[in-house]
Image (cartoon, rainbow, N blue to C red; front, side, top):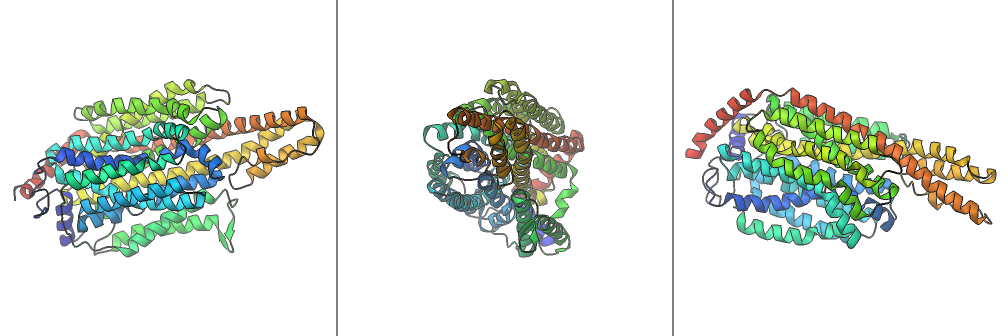
Length: 567
């Protein structure tokens, strides 16, 4: 980073004196009412984080209502996460140049209109397109929320608002299934999107009147090469992972294969990192920020948490509704202990991080979260009752409540004031990148395990049928396993003409039993993946520097900020 860019980053990240006549004041912390402004921003942020998980609860309803395959429904969630994650670094820069309030408002309008379009979608393809636009609106909003904390509050008072911001992210992410269940059961799946419209209008109004129009007007140089490399690279990796099962991990079209798409994406992302190092103007991703160990390790832990939060509910919701037979509302209630316990624990975890090093709180939280998921895999059977999982969800909630607020503080506390703006954008991006990869990876692993379990379970069940009907029974599930994720196809296989009523009933019962046993086994294996990923998050936390070192850096940061605030 050259001297000019360092000065730009200092002004944008440190909450210094660049406010100007239209800003909230010359220095951070001089806004008359910073908390109402933060509340307005968090209302919009809550809405966009809610949409990262609320769709999962509606998956069975959308499969029926849109006649969609499992692969298409996974894309409905993944495309949102993808278009949300990729532009985050760019939209952070745009906020510095044109004003964070204006970017936030623009994104909020786009998000609200796209939510309405999602609700009116009549096909999976239209819904996927509308979700992509919704993700772009979310990308414009998120960096401005975290950056405004550095504008509204002085360094010595950022802990509480940063904790609130982290708590909003955590509670919104895990509240989605409960609220979604109520909406799907009472009004229909479309209302998980329609509900955003009145919330969006209220958030727009509150932002206009409560949030100061701070205008830094930094002349940032944009990095089109970096934007292209990161965008195309991430898309190729996610597309290859998610669609690999559909194309049997082989040819997509002509000479293009799934491994080639994934390999090209990885090479483009490597090229992106190399370009950020050699770009002497103003790179999209200033690599110097990763020289701070706690920041680097916090982002690694953030990726593992995003990976798990975005992916774990996909198999769980299908299992609870399609295998155990619970309604959408009951599905939300069954998972509610995770949200409820997390909300209770989060404030105490934030206060505790003032007394002991946050690394131990986050490491313990991630380990406890992993333990809760492991308990779910051990308790899951094809004939379990929903309340069997309450202890596991309580344990997972205890873990989640200890993660978000302390982790956000660990990532930003102690950063050089010139790098806080860039660091905030990177921290937001890392969680969303983890979410994108987690949604795709868990989705494809679930489909892969179903492709193995369905034929195996069908072969075992076919032995109970009269000999003339065994072959067609097995072929129906084998065809579904080799298809594009439409695993209900086997159940729609027409029965032979003239089949006795008793045999037809036996076929239907065996077909349902095959799916229940196969999906339960596939889900239990799939949920082991986030447990392994979270273990890497624990290791990242343990690699952080102790509290004393971070505190020293934080004091240095506060002192470095003081001249800017006094000007």
